[in-house]
Amino acid sequence: EAGVTQSPTHLIKTRGQQVTLRCSPISGHTSVYWYQQALGLGLQFLLWYDEGEERNRGNFPPRFSGRQFPNYSSELNVNALELEDSALYLCASSLVVGGYEQYFGPGTRLTVT
Amino acid sequence: RKEVEQDPGPFNVPEGATVAFNCTYSNSASQSFFWYRQDCRKEPKLLMSVYSSGNEDGRFTAQLNRASQYISLLIRDSKLSDSATYLCVVKQNFGNEKLTFGTGTRLTIIP
Image 1 (spheres, rainbow over the protein chains, first blue to last red):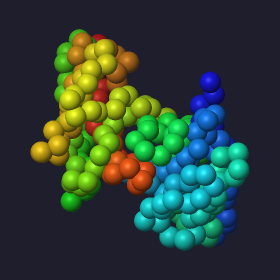
Image 2: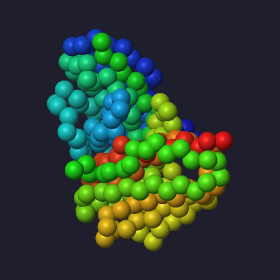
Image 3: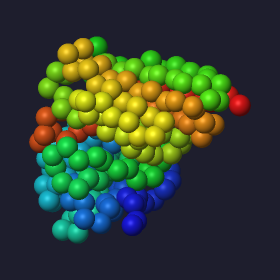
């Protein structure tokens, strides 16, 4: 069974640009989560989507947004990139809400110059 | 105070030894608990869930103490392949699905 997939694997952008990251969950999983892992910092929760709806968001500015499509895949959009947005962006999926484990994709490494 | 606190290590342990990690969490509403491992520049992988009664998976044993808000992970007969960063992870009550991660404990197994 295929795991969570993410694209692209690496990305280099300049400050002020916009970026879109993509995630496909494990087949059958309806919930998708986005996390940011900046260098030397722990994983920080960004967004949670379930059944196409945004259910929760972390303490990030509105320029971080996303959506979930009917096939449960998801996009994370970051506008007006700042240098401190450089990080590994991880997507996770879980079967349904309610205590099920989250499984992570390999991440997209974003570098902002 | 951080929501999830771990000793960052590093722990340098000889092969075959037993090593224990501890973690404390601040939110008493937390309901689900996990240990993930993360290899360098890779994604976190679920190691095991932690249940109130404690649970074991091969060489790994996890314990939860709700009264003290404390989680532990014990690795017996450590292998070189156990070298990784171990992340303590907490989730609040059902319906709030965000995971809160500790910053991780780095473990290196020495031949």
